[in-house]
Structure formats: C-alpha cells, structure tokens
Image (cartoon, rainbow, N blue to C red; front, side, top):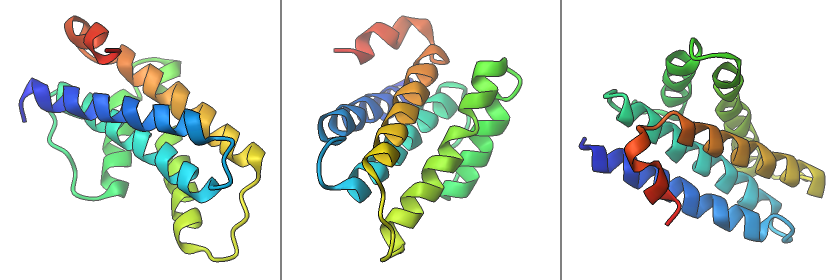
Length: 135
C-alpha cells in the first residue's frame, strides 16, 4: 500500500474516535465499546503501514504484530501495545455475549484507552503528515 493508505487508516481512526467521544454517554454501550476497538484497529493499521509492513488478515494477528512492532520503542509504546488486545476482548464480549452489561464507567474507560492509543499512534507516524490528520 502507498503512504496514502496509512494516512487513510489514521484519518478513519480519528473519525471513529470523534464518534466515540460524542456517544460515550449514550445508552448504546456495546456500540461505543465496539467503536473504541475499531478506532484502535485503524490506528494500529496506520502505524504498521507507515513502517512498510503488510496488514495481517486477522484481528489477533494485527494485535500481535502491532505489539511486536512497538515493544522496543519505549515504555509508552510497550504499554500502548497492550491496549488493542483489551479492547478486542471487550468488543467481542459486547458483540456476542447476550448477558453483558457494560457500565458507564466501562464505556468511559474504553473511550479513554482509545484516545490514549490513537494519540500515541500519531506520534509513531512520519512527521511530515501528522498535522494533516487533524484537518
């Protein structure tokens, strides 16, 4: 994929994250939880593509490859590498468990992790394109 591909993934991550921020207090916790994961998913895709790596075919492989890619970039990156796995498990539980009952605190925590993750991923992207992501 071209450099434009990673840029498109990060822009999508930012759009989904804005939606999460607007809906975090809504009565749709499973939807917000799912969107938190997908904001992280697209941000992780952007980082991998910006480093010239192909995108894995499965969610688990993407999560694993992202973690391996960032683990040696410092403590913040190492911590960020653990967030998509937690988000994926929450999303899976929300999508498939009919007895799940996420609280408002669960949703706000997921939102905060998604914000932290996407923000950190922005710092891992090539500098010349970072400013354009905010527009």
